[in-house]
Image (cartoon, rainbow over all chains, first blue to last red; front, side, top):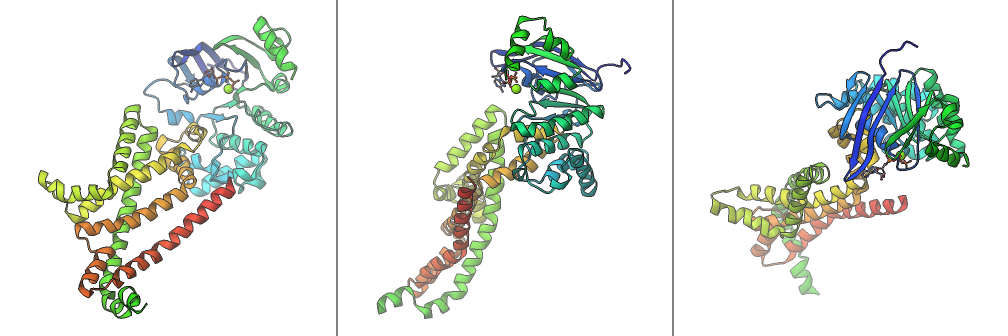
Length: 248
Length: 223
Ligand SMILES: Nc1ncnc2c1ncn2[C@@H]1O[C@H](COP(=O)(O)OP(=O)(O)OP(=O)(O)O)[C@@H](O)[C@H]1O
Ligand SMILES: [Mg+2]
């Protein structure tokens, strides 16, 4: 891998809700093709930070560059920027009034301006990639949670984003459905997708992550390769947290 | 019994009054075809302002909605028709009805649609925006279709009320069904035209009433 500029470069990101500072100057830089895992206790600001990376949440201070775009600049066309940043949510958020294929087609048509036939073809390919070619014409309510989350991944990757953000993609799933979603994520990684994943799937992190970031109280407390963070963390907070999730 | 039939269900009178009643019915249909879309358009606008504007716009939209739901529609209509000319503004009978229904009916539709929009989880908008859709596109393709579906029984039910309410246009001398029925009643000294008008309303609205029941049952079953 050549040492080019990072594809995500967030610096000093602050976010307050009312009087409460939820992010206190978070830095994160992610290289192309890197898979970064973000862990940390509930309420530490993981989701808020991830949502700042596509500006679903407006940071109060700091700078964020994604794929060379100054995300927080008023001149930036945020909708154009967001095509390059896919996001997958804990609760899937599929459009319930559309079939799996229509879910994927909407942005292809409205954002990329593809015609109906093009979009249908691209959507079919994306759904095939997540193993749902046979379920294309099903509505979300007719799919299992794991299948719904894979449709949500297809909806994001169909736009050919440069980075993918995952916010606890498996934590709303029954245990037996988690594997299918993780497999899709593993394949994405093998295809070279840059990914930031908030999740507590430790086994997956150990096997697939390049780097693990531990957040606490709105700050990045430490980061490093999975082996280091999981086996020999520097901070007592990290150690306590790892002990606690290992027990589950 | 004989007297009752003579006064209320007099076939001779029906045939006599038929052409004038029919014209009234056509007016009622035309009025409905104008007021329902107007009210819906006003309602969508109000609901969008009340759910996605800045705080002061929301407040304004909420106040507006409250105000025009509290004013009796008949009072509003008479004011627009007979009051505004004192300020040099003469909107005419059709104009007064259009404006009155836009304000009154728009507020009712707006309230229903606002509830519908609020029933759609926030994650829907966020998912749509995360793929690069504009707020307007997300509203049009993702939020509003679900909002409408969630409150469909209330929307149809409101539409039913709007069609009934077009009869107040008779007050500003628009010759809709009720107006014509009263004309016919006066001309024939017989109540049959009023009964005939009631039957016409029933035949027009009964399918909508059935539809509301079916939608409500479906909504209950879906729960
Ligand atoms: N829209 C909001 N308004 C007010 N407070 C918020 C909002 N979103 C998040 N918060 C608060 O910010 C803090 C961080 O929340 P966040 O969801 O980022 O944490 P998290 O690390 O993702 O936690 P979890 O593991 O439970 O998902 C919490 O205290 C939360 O209550
Ligand atoms: Mg979270």
